[in-house]
Amino acid sequence: MKSMTQDELKTLVGQAALQYVVPGEIVGVGTGSTVNKFIEALATIKHSIKGAVSSSNASTVRLQALGIPVFDANEVGELAVYIDGADEIDGRGYMIKGGGAALTREKIVAAQSRQFVCIADESKLVPTLGAFALPVEVIPMAAQRLIRQFAALGGAASIRLKDGLPLVTDNGQQLLDVTGLQISEPLAFESQVNQWPGVVTVGVFAHQKAQVCLLGTASGVKLIAYG
Figure 1: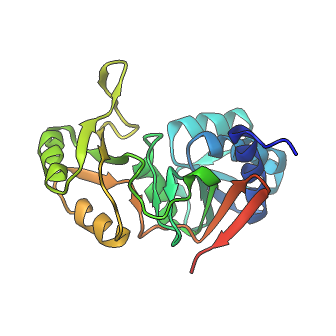
Figure 2 (figure 1 turned 90 degrees about the horizontal axis):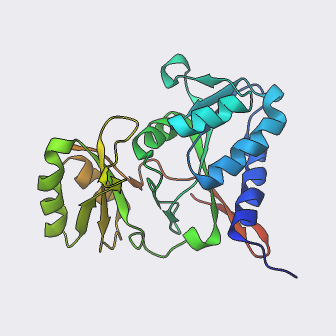
């Protein structure tokens, strides 16, 4: 049997996530290449949902282009489900997110949702978080001090650039990418870093972890449920 490409695996899990969409409800939609596959799948059932709350400008544009209404998070109450990808996910449902620069809004929508369904290909499943550079959204005036704070933890942080200049997030802030960390206690780590003045949010999703992961594997979609 011909092995599937990463793109084909993303399509597979994007379609599989439709089973978690509640008819007549507003669905929380994340950001990234895997989520783009979910948005394409969501368009096939768009008449059975009220619309979406989006975690990024990029996803909003994509949803609206496919005729899916997008609501401001403040306009709606609790969401039944939030569907998003991950840069890494461990055996407990803890994740690193933010490779697409939308981590703060992703965490806000995740907190507004009863269930977080992670969609990913099997390359994202790791024993310990930290191999993927950890994104941290920061207020620019604090960037250099925060780089020094991460250095004290053994991490090497740098400001993410785009076209040679600091990338500006949808929230008007900057991102640090931190390498060299082994995050064995994600809950404690997330709480610690979020307390540092100047941090908007850290890309560890432990307090807003996944309850379910749909993992694209060579043998199809594997369902992992977390306690």
